[in-house]
Amino acid sequence: MHALANPLKAMTTNLLDFDLHGLQAFCESLGEKRFRAQQLFRWIHQRGESDFDRMTDLALVFRQKLKSHACIKGLDVISSHTSVDGTIKWLFSVGNGDAIEAVYIPESDRGTLCVSSQAGCAVGCRFCSTGHQGFSRNLTTAEITAQLWMAEHHLRQKLGRSERVISNVVMMGMGEPLQNYASLVPALKTMLDDHGYGLSRRRVTVSTSGVVPMMDRLGDDCPVALAVSLHAPTDALRDVLVPLNLKYPLHELMQASLRYLDHAPRDFITFEYCMLKDVNDQVSHAQELVALVRKHAAQGLRCKFNLIPFNPFPDSGLVCSDKTTVQVFADILLQAGFVTTIRKTRGDDIDAACGQLAGEVLDRTNAAKRMTHLREANSTTHVVQVKRPLPTSSV
Image (tube, rainbow, N blue to C red; front, side):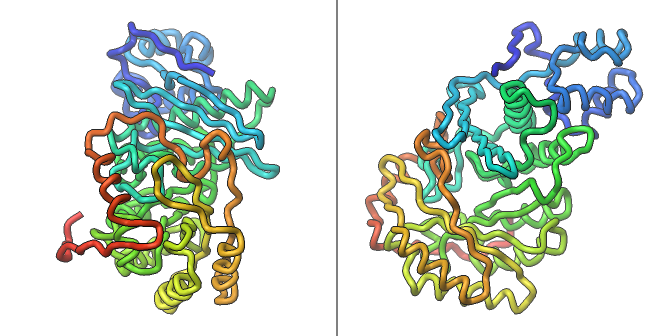
């Protein structure tokens, strides 16, 4: 698996940056008909082709224009590791000292690719390795799409298959997808397009820590399955675990989730909940969670819970809840009538499990200093309440 790196094409347009609509506009700028974009789009995404000379059903003149003005360039692979359970983790360079990770998770009935949206993350969730590294920059649409483009066609070649290998994509890698909205949406549209990867909206999931205005925009622009990183039943606790809660507290998040259901391809929202020993895993927390969701269920909110065992990483200062505690927590939710699953940990032997993706990030936000301060201020058994800002209506 490798990227095609040609320094002579440094100033050309990378066609992985376009969804079909964008590619149509680009072809028109070259003096070509819009239907040529569909042919080109299929060559790129369905066949994985990067050499314009091999696109034999394109007119020679068109191919010459493409060779002069465009390129199809993936990401440079720094490393690739395969877990004992078949999970594959790739570390991709995105330049200037930054690297991102993508993970392929094979199962008997599906193949899921976990995709990154940013080099680092500015949200700074306490239990997430990416957040402890800080934030460098947003990925381009090409860098998001390239993760799928490279993984899909590498796996086809490796497995000797001509049909699709990756059936599901989850935007649950490095970064907060909805804080990179402009690059995210064209990548999602490429995943969904029948001339691209043809994935079902139900099989493409965006995970968010709760960027409320962008949740509303996603519902209007490109509704796919939505997973909300909840992780706490009260504002006091979530303010510490998910600092974005200071800007968009639980009531606003629940209302946004309710609004999203009007557009969602599934009839429920998934709430993700990382199980942290003595922090958010007690019976009282489960009862508070039931009360929180029931309040909004009365307005029509439908949801399922995904309990995620915490995957440790250096200096987190946190410990995973034991299996008995997780099961007791799940039973309370189940008895309250909520569909609840306990996520099976995959790829933890290669640090590819949920919350472990870190890559290499040239932090521009002093996150490491902030996270050290949080670790010192909060033990695993005690949470210091954060002073909430005054309400604001700005995004």
